[in-house]
Amino acid sequence: MPMIQEPILFYNKDAESYLGSLEAQRDFSQLFVITDENTNKHCLPLLTEWLGHKQFIEIQIRSGEEYKTISSCASIWQELTAHKADRKALILLLGGGVLTDMGAFAASCYKRGVQFLNIPTTLLAMVDASTGSKTGIDFDGLKNHIGLFSSPIATLIHQDFLKTLDQRQFKSGVCEMFKHGLIANADHWKSLISHVHEPEKLISDSVSIKINIVTQDPTEKGMRKILNFGHTLGHAIETHFLGSSGALLHGEAIAAGIILESFLSSNFGELSTIALEEIAYTLKEYYHLPSLSRSDQEAIYGLIKHDKKNHKDTVNFVALTKIGEAVYDATYTDQAIDQAFVFYNALTYR
Image (tube, rainbow, N blue to C red):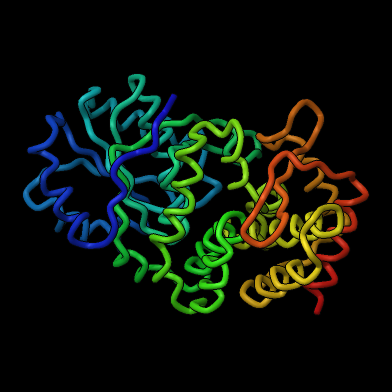
């Protein structure tokens, strides 16, 4: 059974000293850094400074969810093979959630596994994608359809990288922080609302909530499923709009999913109407969310049938019982989901 990675290092001095001691700690044959066109330009100079005299080989991939594919992994494997990378190599993953998910998957498959280290450069990757030991790629139009559990030797979280983000990307990451509060810590939810213009102050708290859940259930057999709150419908919404002029960032799609699944939790579960309104209006004010036409809804219905949490033909959701508490394996009728779309569209039209 995979274990949660150790350590997770926050901020400047720990990250720099850890990278500075890599050669002394471990006998790596080669050092590779995987980047995309954005992190090559904005983030690699800082990493190069941390590495000092250490020589490394850069492998650059294209950014964007549409490139989170087996073809991109193949290009990584081809580069590693061309440079004669062996199982003693170390791969540093310098990027956001797409890059750390896919890079970790590629590293874990190459020669049955080479060690990798996550250096998340987006808020979303810092608080969610790079922690928890999940890796994966999209396949056949389905998000994270192929993947495995594999832990990095460390995750280095350095806030200087956040300066490279535009506001939309930054706010996308906040949604996962909102989710952590909603499912497991009401105080975190309230603190985020109070610090909505400076959520970076709460990164370590948000990561701690996730790691506490994952440590108790590393391979998502039970309670770890609550981390998927908002994601059953949110992932389907993200996938549906992928590649279109209305493409959504991950956090934006999950915000829509959280509103929809909060409605289901309230009207067909234990969540109070007051809590539903607090959640819905908070996210509606923070994100610019699209309305969903009937054709959009039909496509989303088709996509949720492939969700990884499903059992046979049953679509399993995460439901809130109150802000700060969630249950998994909730089920709803198609009619209930229809009502959730009506509520969501009425909200986004206002």
